[in-house]
Image (cartoon, rainbow, N blue to C red; front, side, top):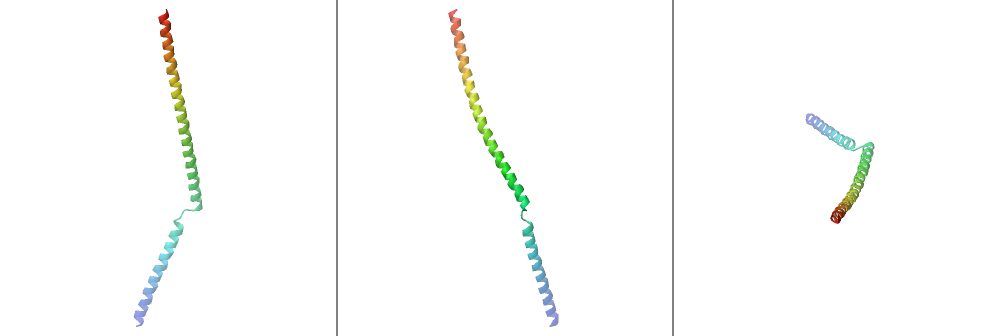
Length: 96
């Protein structure tokens, strides 16, 4: 009987050791797997920089659209003046 009891204790000790080791690994992996405060801070800084860059892009797109409208207006004015000049030149040529 003592042989069976000795093996049972050995198996129980082995199972206990495996269980404790597994729990220790699980807890240490859970703790080590998360980001550090420094990493979170760097991530937040990068997010803020990205937000600022996106805001700047939006502002530049708005400015580009405004300038394109201004160019279109000036081109239309130039065309109208060129047409008026051509009409005036034609009228002067007919008067001569």
